[in-house]
Image (tube, rainbow, N blue to C red; front, side, top):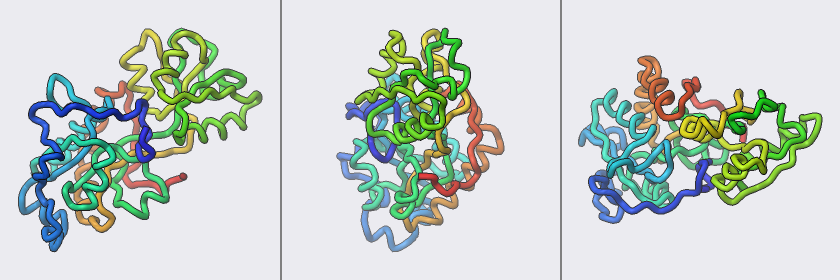
Amino acid sequence: MNDLCDFSLPRRRLLKAAGVSLAASGLFAGGSRSARAETTWKAVQKRGVLNIATEMQFAPWDMIADGKYAGANRELIDAVGAKLKIKVTYNDIPWDGILPGVEAGRFDLCIAPVMATKERLTHYAFTNPIGAATAALVKKANDTSIKTARDISGKIVGVQKGSHVVMDLQSFSATLPKPVEIHEYLDNSQAYADLASGRLDAVANSSPSLAYLAQKRPETFALVSPPFGKPTYLCWVARHDDTALIEAINGALHAITEDGQIAAIQKKWFGVVTPLPQSLPTPVI
């Protein structure tokens, strides 16, 4: 799992599918430093194209389905592009090349969801939230002993090693009558397997990841609501000085919130609708 993005599965390199542009070609609109003589947003408006990058290996945000780019992010950025009356060009590249590519001007925007933190805000410009990353729990579908998060008191809970969820779970455990027995895993899929087999009572992860899991496997897993962690949010990211681009994106995000598109996309991909703040709150971490 990348340190910038808190996801349910480690990012793995994906063979590029037909019809998806590749970073390796080096052919990116606005890629030269000379193009930075004008603001990125003015350049986007002039060419009528927003050049985005993500790694299409993290369902349900970004993925390849039937040889085509799909996912919640695809639908969100397409809706934003429609509001701004610009075309969106998609680039599928390994995660570790995305932010350097944004900084170098090869891409206008990173739409691989990045969790907003105090430290990251000093390096990048963040859009308003496009998703929640607050720590939550998933249990076995037939477990009636866990109705709210506090019911994990004295129980065994799995979590991915190194994620921000570990700290949230430890802090939450300290507030319970009995401490939680925390088992850390290198891969969330291993934790989910142990939960399904009865070796764990619950698994902690970011709320959208668990909502997607529960929606895909309702016979096995059920989401525990509400989340227990500190409120954290996922955003898209641009260069630190690209304030005009961020303002334009935020305006479009507000418009698709008002007309119900964001709620419909959330319901489709996560099975639940999570209201999002209309501006990025000061990060708690």
